[in-house]
Length: 267
Ligand SMILES: Nc1ncnc2c1ncn2[C@@H]1O[C@H](COP(=O)(O)OP(=O)(O)OP(=O)(O)O)[C@@H](O)[C@H]1O
Image 1 (cartoon, rainbow, N blue to C red):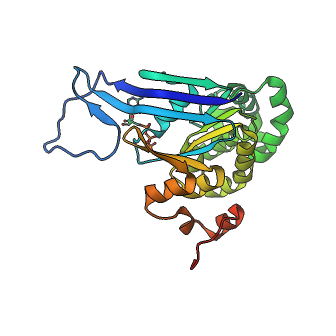
Image 2 (image 1 turned 90 degrees about the horizontal axis):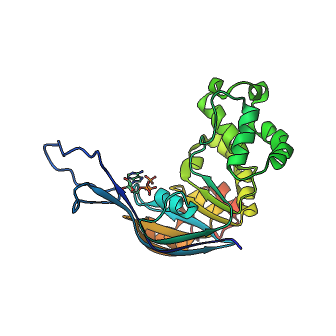
Image 3 (image 1 turned 135 degrees about the horizontal axis):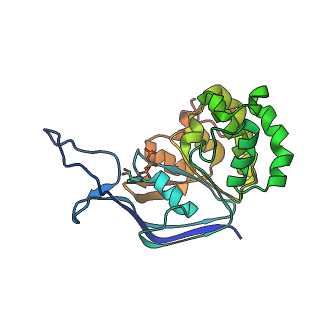
């Protein structure tokens, strides 16, 4: 039984080393959670009163402005953050894919990093041994796989990390948008693997600013605004409300064809 339940949960970050304001003119902030000033130390109220129930088969996109609370919510859903108030219960094995580089070691080889990263994401050594050749081929890194990671360029690291991430069998897959930040050509190559990964996973929550990726991977969505859930519903409904236009009006022809989505009349 795979599920995540959150009841009236809030997450606060007390900031002990905040500097007093030195700007001549107060700048009105438009992004980020509310900064409470009632107590002695400023407190960033990143999430408020979150109530959500996520079940097997759900494919949820998280949308919202910078600082709206998407990443914090993902970390709450993964069990990495405990709620400051309220409660959260996670049932199932979580693969948190927040930062593609987490769990990578500079001093060991690409091959060894594939194993280590796979174990971190909940796979067994046996499972990873079976997949390592397939991952190696996907990365196109060739002899570099025997070299220490410190000799890799940024793009080479991303290839390695994406190869591993898209090879796992997660029960609960929590993806942060970093994954969408890889270069377009490689993302194209990784796209089918990403779609398969999501199909294999029991439950997905994906924070992203990219409509086409959201449309490809998710069916419903949550709109976060200033740490609160502003709206929850079908992906199309939520994106339309958040962006002020139908998301299908802006995706490329190729994406539309892949999605086999109904094109809007007049397009
Ligand atoms: N570790 C932290 N310590 C202090 N404040 C934090 C921390 N992490 C997040 N915050 C604050 O919590 C709020 C929500 O941040 P979060 O990273 O969840 O937003 P987001 O919706 O993922 O934004 P983005 O789209 O820019 O990635 C912001 O005001 C941010 O400043």
